[in-house]
Image (cartoon, rainbow, N blue to C red; front, side, top):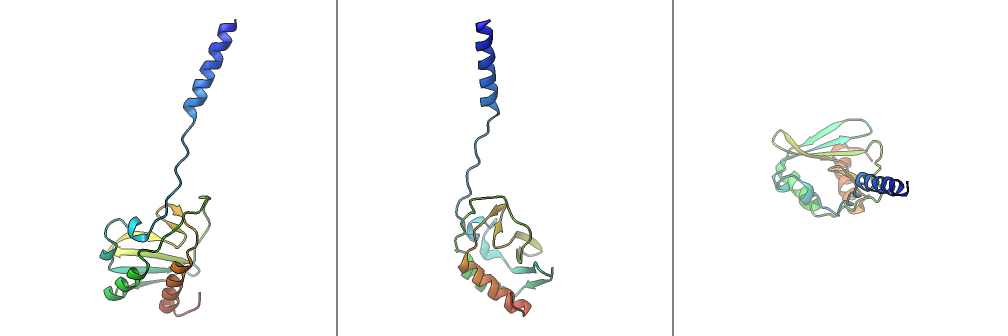
Length: 137
């Protein structure tokens, strides 16, 4: 009887140990250059999406696109401790090569990871949106 209890306990411990999963590693700090699938300097137009209205504007002047990307490509993003997410966004961006969107994101959610607000990046985004949409954000 004693051996049966010991075996039962051991079997339960093995089952419990087998069902545990390793915690997912926390995302690392990134830049848009690192997360972009390819060479970010190949982006030839940027789509801006006003999340409050749904209006969209496409920037297709290659020199303007490259100038803006050169200012933001190496800004570092820090993952949020909590990856629970949020609802909605104000600023949506899409980086395109030709007709293909290579990266769609917002300033707080990039490639499946939520990031803390970055004041430097937000300044560039807000300036661009206010210039293109001709309104205050």
